[in-house]
Length: 296
Image (cartoon, rainbow, N blue to C red):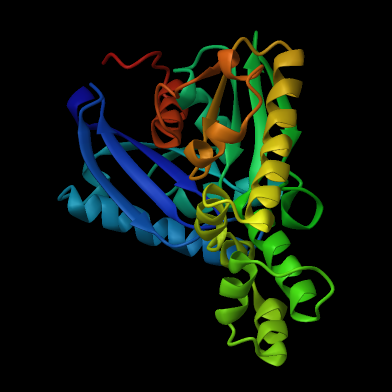
């Protein structure tokens, strides 16, 4: 029965996993949030997080008996870049749902432009660019923390801590920002180095709000770090425009903080996202079920 169909969107990344459930006529049913779900970093742990967050979302919706509903799931997941990883996710969910899996940027781009042509630049824990233009997908960046993510919270945080390490040895001038970061580790070299040995991208990204705040207050290092990262974001956006994207939406937790630092020539091409990545993932599920748009 049509009224028994549910459409679930999953947005999983290096910081958290979010889930939204809508009915066939697009009414909101429930939402839930869990821990990190980056398939590239830890496939098994990510799948466990996704399943646990799905159970939470279903419980909040009062849907303990999953078999009583037709569930269609769209998943936009960081690290969903190989057939092996996407197949693992599908196997985990296929017993109770039809499943469509793609990278998180694709779901975000679908949502940002409500399925139409356009591009996005993701500026969050990581960074990347994606555009959908006349049925073609244009992917920029997305190489991850070790090779890419310029313009991300993780890289801004790591760059700031590298400067802090240099200032600790008097190799570059200190600043209030660098002193504050070193104070996090009591200016203890061993504690600082040991933390870095185990740090994940999200651990570095936690410092991004402090760095933006320092930049706004005129801190020399904070301002330089944010300006450098903003240039990286602008390069992603300009390349997507060159590939035919008619408009660009900045998405992710750092989209608004970056806005004042972007070149003025870029700003006429920037638009607000129409929908978020969760609704983009729900669109994936609806398309897989043969539905277009948001009408039942």
